[in-house]
Length: 120
Length: 242
Image (cartoon, rainbow over all chains, first blue to last red; front, side, top):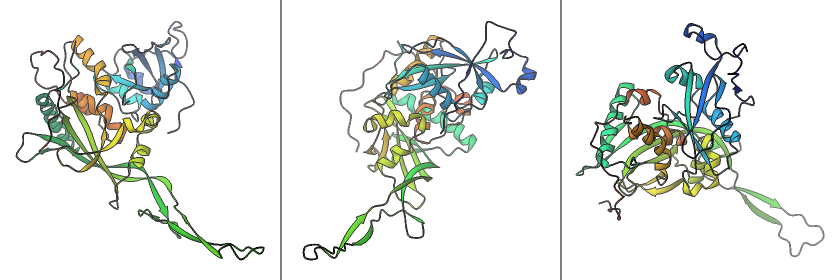
């Protein structure tokens, strides 16, 4: 599938007055087109300098995975795995907005990621 | 240190729990017991998409036969008509890969050697033609395709099904513990359990077109807690199947 050219937006966590305010009342959640994602590295995987990202609801896991892979400058022989709740891996075609609805807490979706040379 | 290995009893328990949820969703999984044996496996058929090669006939219709189209070429050589043939036959095999509907059959077996589950599958066109290995590689989900194309033979190959003796495609289990480790380690640290099969399937399923609805990850319980046992190394020999 074609990659969304637009990268997730870095959350302006130090400036509460900016338009991209992550935390809002749940009643207004439907109006927001983006959700906050917190990326956590697993094991020896490099930690991303920016961990908190504002991601469009319709963005797929695959798209996010590609973004992280590029951000980490991963090699072609490396595979990125993403985990939700540290208990399963979401389908690459899954929309992050749906994941947020099901597994989001404190206004954000926490995703763990791991770099691996799996299947080799 | 948690063991990333799965014993056969827990495998069966996890499968049965998955099966219960599958029944509630009408998701199509079934448990197949091998006659005269304790062994069994999970099975499911589903339609998906894949990249298959098709040949186009004169009318532009696709055919599932790998036919060679024969063209006659006439060489008109005005200069020398002694040595040259008047005509030459050239065989051209036209292949174009396109997205088409593929019938998949998935089996989840337990591997004694690796002490992990293993995903076996078959893939065929709606006309019944089995996909070849290259077509299966081409059909891998784009998220994993680049990695697979780097070393395809290490990822998906064809093997004899251990219980049925038929040719199946198989997703290699040798690195299962690598992608299971983060989940199992977190579960151990947080004093909770996971359903190994659900977690494992959520990773491997999408690679080969097997959809695992999100509800599996929230609704399928863990197997009954068993007292912690020290990690056992895999047995040295893989016992041959009858």
